[in-house]
Image (cartoon, rainbow, N blue to C red; front, side, top):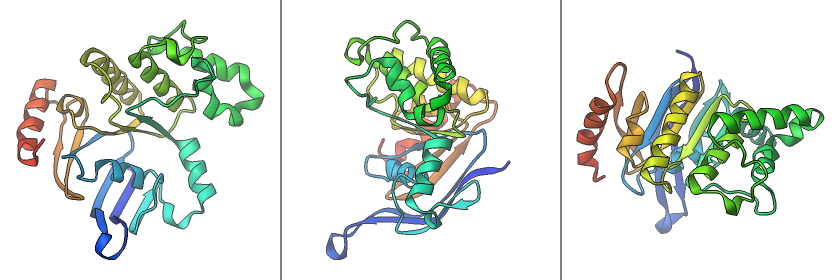
Length: 249
């Protein structure tokens, strides 16, 4: 399978001298096109730092990150920003929306500049996505007048409206109740079934059990990996739970 992302010996540290903290310590990993990968580990293990580093949201201290063969460290800020904007999608634990815009306008805003001449088509695509994730009819609602689960669905619509090659999620279900969390994960699974590459950071074994591969991190290093093919959800959950018991989760 062709890799969409390759991370080679990446190191990320903060501070200098006695205040130097190593967040990533020589991480090697790859993400193949079309896979569903989750990253797990204790708090402070480097999960989110890894996501920010391989997506170009944060600079690395050494090593290299290749996106479709292009070394992100060799590109200028504008080129990296264009890759993130056009080829990547992001969903975070808290859905950040502009309070002065309604739900629909928040969804289309990041994609508007690229589709200024096709605004009608853009709005139509956004409404279609809203319908597919179960929030049709909320287009003109103020973001304060929708639930957390509905807002997270809207943020997913925003993240995939431009049809990115890869969707990143940093604890995307962390602020949701169990019902909303399960619905969001079913949505991610459906997106992956339709060909979208997905990488999620999570502390939740039930979330990880929806994926095809799990990387386990500790102290800034990848310390283990699980791969799944035909296992049932319960079998995946049991394997993840057993493996992670030694990681303090």
